[in-house]
Length: 375
Length: 245
Image (cartoon, rainbow over all chains, first blue to last red; front, side, top):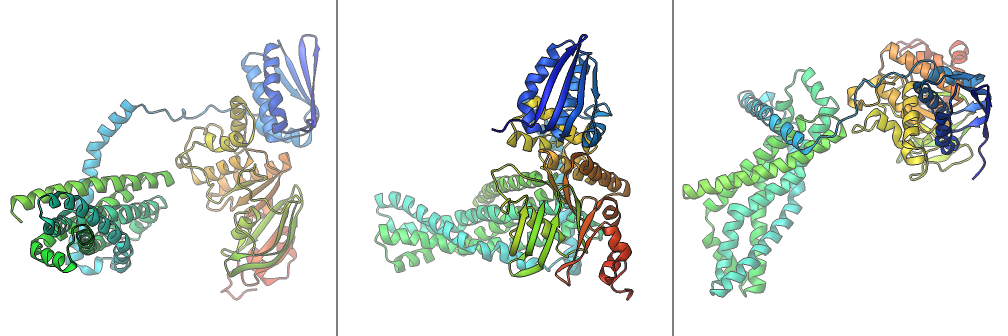
């Protein structure tokens, strides 16, 4: 380590302490000595004279440390005089030393305890409920306007959105539902084999996949892909004032941004669910062939007998509502984004969690309703 | 000292500027100017190491490879929007480089951070978050963070763009004061004429069509004595569509 390019010499005379600073001062070199110097000065009686005659240069950090010490000594009612500064040191002293430090205008951000958080959350629920109702009203009104006057609908993005949310997500939907079909098949096979009902594996997988699991898994995948993307996209637009810009040119952000996304998912999710049904059935068939000695023809014949249009239809109805819920919730979370990058992250997380919650709730509601009405 | 030799910049195969050669002497206030979209900010991103040059070398104090992650920065950079971390207070934004790269005690860091905020006129705003202050204040806070480690070299991207005239003048004065009192070399990208004449000692003017430097020197001299119609149009704020040269 090189020796510092500065010196600080102390002279005590007639009860006063004179510190002569000489050389070039850099905060990185001064820092290790600063606490020692500070303790020494606070332990001395003063008054003090800081003589900067020999200081050829000082960086901002060194001057800040020097003046910080001065303020500290003065607050201990000790007199401090800074003398002899010339050139750049004098100019820096003028910037930093002339005015007394201003008080901090605001306290540091307080730590929020768990009880405070619970209280704040409870207080938020009411206002959020009202805001969400207003938003759903806006979406409904925009949809009604678009039906009455189709020219108000922003259809330019629709094709791209359907492709992005549907076709681009198809491989992962197929793969996940194939694996779900395999899992269902294995679990079912273990039970059915005990009763000699191997062939009924096709009924089990076919009906469960088309009525519930296929649409549900598809909705969860779409929530993770497209729901998160919508929330992040609209959240970024909100924080970069693009949403405000849409408003200022006389457009309704809900109609312009939300409706195309809602329609896109109402088209894409049922279509994806259909493919998911096929993949799930195929997964079950793989298990039937490999574990239960069924032939592909047997399996498919049995599936044709077991599956009715109403099974596939109920799944598609659910998918339509899942798509609607995913788009409406994701866009709501995106448009409610506040703050910067952190706010976008919060909205995205919140969108995915809320969507999954509501998708499961809808699944339970529809399953119960279909059961009650014998569909 | 910055020395740029035979520099070509751009993205992929798209060359924005080529054959750039210039030097920035130590202690200078050097302005890179030119019209919108001519490549000023791209040149700055190359100078600070955020982009790799397509060709040529950038030598800063004898070192050509300077964009190192995991090493203390050798210069300060202020981005056009301030580039502040939104989840941190102004104090935390300025303290971060000091906490990362110095052995200063917490009390000393507090003293230094407050002094940096004072230099840019933001004393009192230590506990404000970036979204609680104006655009001009964000830029000044960005400068305070760039100054945290007392770098010998400061890069500023469009410091006064988008500010009201008073905030712009105050920011210009801060830049001049910093240069005079700390002897800091300052490289500024701007197209704000008032700022250019107030703060710049030397400049280069870039031109999109020429894909290079079309003028260099003291901006006041260029304004008063240049015969290049492109330079005169820029300084006299003339439209290219007006036909006036």
